Image (cartoon, rainbow, N blue to C red; front, side, top):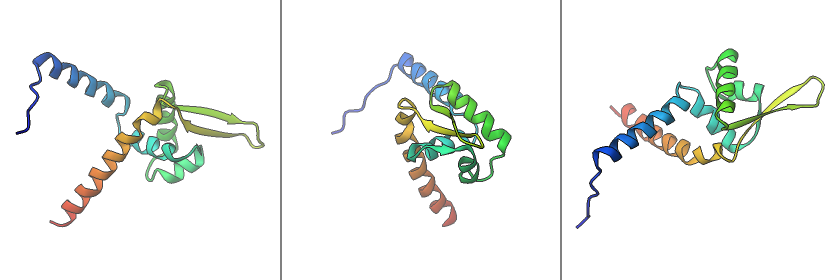
Length: 117
C-alpha cells in the first residue's frame, strides 16, 4: 500500500508562494525558451534571436536583462570589432535545466495528444 503524504495548509500555502515566485521570474512566453537555449551552450544575441522563433529584438533584450537581473544568465561584451555580446547560463541558472526538460517532455506529449484528436 502506498502511503500518501498529507500536506498541511501552511505547507500548501508555502508551496503556492514558491510557485508564484518562480512564475514571476520566468513569466512570459520567452524566458523558458531562452534558458533552454543557453543550457546547451553560450550564445550571441543574434544567435538567440534566430533560435527563439517569433521573438522580437526588443523583447529579447528585455527578457535577457530580466534573466541577468535574476542571476540566471551572464552577459559578456567581447573585445571584437564589431563588438559582440555573448550570453551564458550561470551555475545557478543551470539548475533550471531539469525544469526545461520536464516542460519540453510534457509539451511534446501534449502536442501529440491534441494533434491526435
